[in-house]
Image (tube, rainbow, N blue to C red; front, side, top):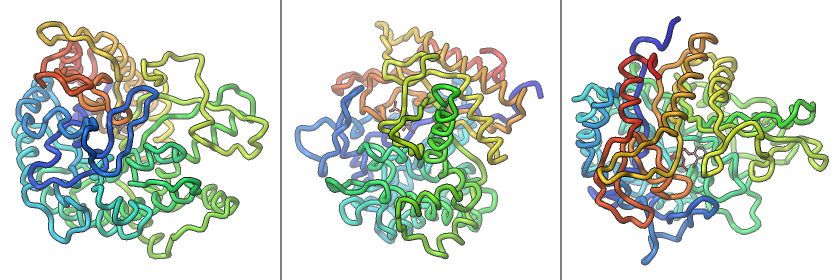
Length: 476
Ligand code: P53
């Protein structure tokens, strides 16, 4: 093979809550993203009890894509996008999450959005749950610690599969479902699963329980999609940060292996339809008694995904320590800095070769088509008077990653479906709530405090990516 396959899905990725705004429009309900304030590097976003007066909630307006999507899609088309990955805000369809009937105004919004994409030959690629579940499901049900959420999610999925089956072929269930492996911090449990913990609560089994319900819900959604329309393709979505051993000491290698087990078992369940034995043994050793029924296991076995979608931004490194003889992985403590790579201003380790490694790792383990649905460089941009940004650093990051991705395809033979860089238009950072952490080819005039005209302009990387797509990845 000389390069990327024909029909390769070049595009860009976003999530509803990070760009739409319009948080109360068209009958939309409050999502978990709507109760998160703005933070910064090293300053966590605050999760408030509902929407409080006087707090800065950056997702409420975001970049106002809700009203400006036509202009934005026009710019994506100008870059030559073949696809556009976004999510359906669950709260536009089921504002509270537990209703029987969907909200027509919300369904209509996505009909119009998808039509606008298709008009330009851009195929929508849709995530069902991207850090924006209904907040009501947190306050009334305790989030995904409650089995009832399976039904609510499956109902939502069936409604949108049915409604958009002729407009959307590629779907993903839960965005970065494995972020919650980092359960000691508050962010991932809340954004993934609507989990808030009591002080002193043993967080780990709650995370596994919530993840289990999500995996069952995902499997049931996969099955429903096949019943509704066998043409639909449903994938999982995994946050891939490969974990290297700091040295070749055998203990470091074991630590890295166990760390990979704890972060990526989610993929095993999604792809193989069953739990890996190492995790069942771990549950037993730790005395975790989870609610996993035989019906659940049957559902998992029947709902294996069609492809693996994943994000890739950085690699991690870990090392063994004398006080951890069983090599247990605690993401809040076990990671160390990799001396061989540079870091972004937000401390993310820049490692293009890690993308080639990750593609091979997934392919070796699962032999399913792979889709890189996020990759990108969050950086501080300085716009000129006319809105132009000379973001050569972003071009350097992305071209190095595309070059490694090409080696994985051409030299190593992995089956890669597409590439959608993250935040193709500047949007609100998920991790920090900032506007300042930008990823886009398109600059949006808005700052962390919410000031700015919201006008759009092309960065240097806009033309670069246009050329990449036009040459199917030949010109980097
Ligand atoms: P931000 C952590 C690690 C890897 C990816 O992230 C992550 C996170 C959570 O912050 O999130 C994904 O905006 C996520 C997107 C997010 C993007 O990466 O923190 O799927 O919603 O915006 C970039 O810089």
